[in-house]
Image (cartoon, rainbow, N blue to C red; front, side, top):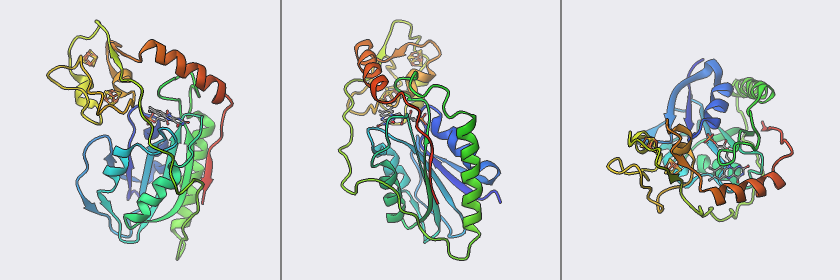
Length: 249
Ligand SMILES: Cc1cc2nc3c(=O)[nH]c(=O)nc-3n(C[C@H](O)[C@H](O)[C@H](O)COP(=O)(O)O)c2cc1C
Ligand code: SF4
Ligand code: SF4
């Protein structure tokens, strides 16, 4: 059955890779949470696979806001967070709670690991072959649970009093290599780069998702070097030991 709806927020590709591996041939309609989402009702027989990254132990607020455009009528959802090998803290509970409040029954959940999108030397090459095999295993287990008469909901870790949303200390810098093509402006998930002036960034909107840094064809967008050094030192100290996927089913 290829009727799963996937709703994915993936500025730099880690969540997309995980969603594709979990859904496999079950993947139907894809909803890109990196762009505005039209309000829509999801029939009870259509499973929703929601996959979002972890930012500061939370789900990015814009992903939550766009996910709320999907309204369930008691049908099943699968909640998946992807994190950069540090910790996912309250993010999985926040995602599950959001889906539940929107009328879905969260019958399965998982936390997977991908390269840290701010410092790519943390969890390099993740998701690797073992991670992707675990995604396939999870997808099959979800399919089997969906075939049950009354699949129950799952409990997930997290504190109901969520951590505060992270404050981003800076925006990416734009170097003289910028040719003004505007690709970063068209692809920024929150409209923080004006198309009329792609060398600038609206600090009030930027969520430091790193998409513009990852996609610029001239590598003209970079993290401010002092920030890169500080993040590298901090994450190398606390996030170098490889974590493993966790499945709740
Ligand atoms: C602003 C920001 C905050 C992040 N916070 C965390 C975190 O709290 N814990 C963690 O392990 N990884 C964290 N990460 C890493 C991402 O969760 C991880 O790289 C994820 O795969 C990114 O998804 P994407 O590749 O689909 O964009 C953060 C990344 C960004 C950009
Ligand atoms: S994608 Fe790169 S080159 Fe193109 S406008 Fe943005 S920063 Fe400049
Ligand atoms: S400007 Fe900020 S929010 Fe927009 S793509 Fe770049 S890092 Fe992400």
